[in-house]
Length: 114
Length: 117
Image (cartoon, rainbow over all chains, first blue to last red; front, side, top):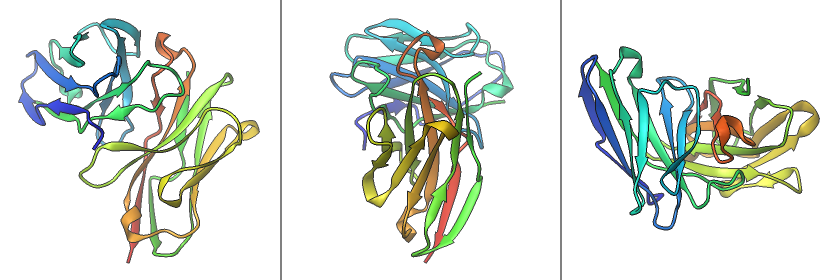
């Protein structure tokens, strides 16, 4: 166990809908990163938050957005869902977001878009 | 663009066989390198990491990896695998300031390891 939890575990949505995924980081970890893992692929970096501010972003459109809260919880929001958004979404927390730190992953939320 | 290549999609070994999983990355600057493992039904967890010093890194459960800068490689090794090593293994690179932040990872596609008892 990594101390990182995510909810829900599974979710089914239809194209065009909006979804919110939740993550609870390890206590004391000020950084949360979100990743998308499509079937048969490695995780792909979406964005990172440090102390409630977006601190970096991968190659994802603006309809992917996030929030981080002072209580070590965070959200990933996806608007206007597309079929290709079907994937496992992982969050990972780390103390300060530094390059050499270990990131601790949650179990993921599996999203299916129909 | 930065990328990570894992050469083998699926590796099947018998117990006690030696393991080497290849990982190459494309990035010319300073990197930190990681191997993560995902056992069936479990979270991704860190196996080992390199960020400076001795290029031969030892991790948990008898795994080790060697960073060869000239070859842009970070191969994972284990002298004798066990059935419990059956898992998916991901190589990851943290390229400084990729995407505007330090602490994000670029993953390879993963290698599934199946160990036959």
